[in-house]
Image 1 (spheres, rainbow, N blue to C red):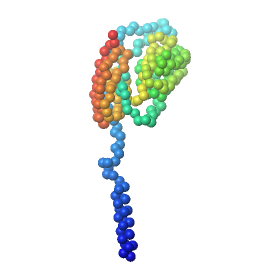
Image 2 (image 1 turned 90 degrees about the vertical axis):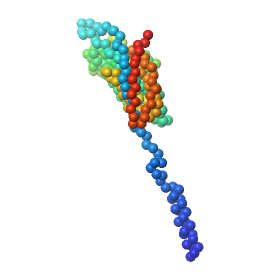
Image 3 (image 1 turned 180 degrees about the vertical axis):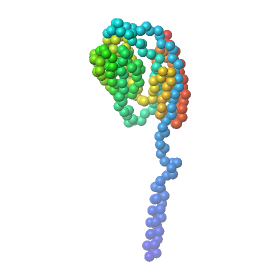
Length: 233
């Protein structure tokens, strides 16, 4: 009996020791949950548009002169962002209208894998094409009410034109990450959900250049960064 009792005590001690080794660690030692990131916002000061005379409509010489698209909007973006090995961007959908003999919006920023629709809302034929190495395409000439679509799978800058209306042009900027913004009418911008860290913030503008800025973003914090675009010589 004494031997049986000693064996039972030994087994109980062993079980208690094993439980002590595999017990759940305290909450402070558990794996941390990824934060929601921070926000970068600010203002971009852009010079006035170059003086451009409005051109007459090619399809209706007696019609109203099409207004020239404003080139004061710019794109602010992070130059590089760490990404995990198997991160995948969701396939997006965007739109660039043809309205009033103008591409709307004049500047479109998207992520790789996005399909852009080009609906014709005018009363004349239009064409949409690009000779960019990033994405070469030609949708041909299509009538009012029709829509052409293009998928953009490579990053870069894609100038867009209409071979019927020489005054029509636009730009599509394709990024491999979602941390970018197009400025509003007042030059303001905001980029949300930026992972905590230090980055180089860049500006793309038709009217000139702006020096890159280094910015540090804290999780849940806000960084204020302004730019001034200087006209290219």
